[in-house]
Structure formats: structure tokens, C-alpha cells
Image 1 (cartoon, one colour):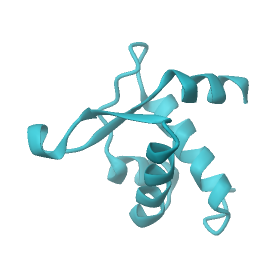
Image 2: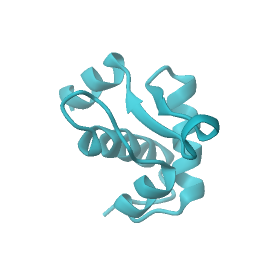
Image 3: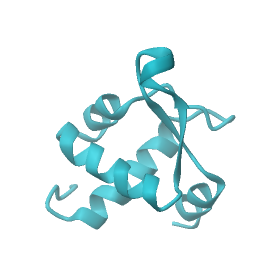
Image 4: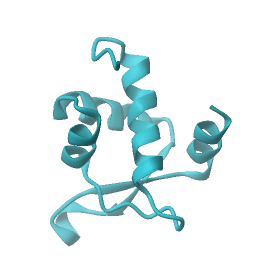
Length: 86
């Protein structure tokens, strides 16, 4: 069970969720609201985790709010390696 008070666990779970929800081309059509629902977390926790992952160079935008009406994310190669190593 995911502990929403364990920030490290939430960040790892968000990264794994983006990985699991992405297709083979590393393209995701999921925004933070979708990821929160997938993990059963509050959107604020997911948004905070996304900010940390973004700053760490683990995420890239697939679509932007301004261009497509939603901001969706995909993992960078660095993050994919981290997820696949466990």
C-alpha cells in the first residue's frame, strides 16, 4: 500500500505510473489528474512529485496545456533506466 506521507515512495510511484501508462514509443496521454486516479492519490501529491521529477531531469512534456489543453508527460531515458533497474 502506498503511503501518501512518504514523499520518496510517492515520487517513485509517479515515475513508475508514467512508465506503466506509456506505450512502447514512450508517449503518454496522461496528465497529473489521470496519474493521481491511477495511483489513488490526491492530485496535489502527484503535482508535487512531477515538479521534483521535472527538476531532476526525469520527465519531458509530451503535450502542453497551451497547445493541447492538457499537460502530459513522458519519462526521459535517464528515468526509464531508473525504473527498469528497479
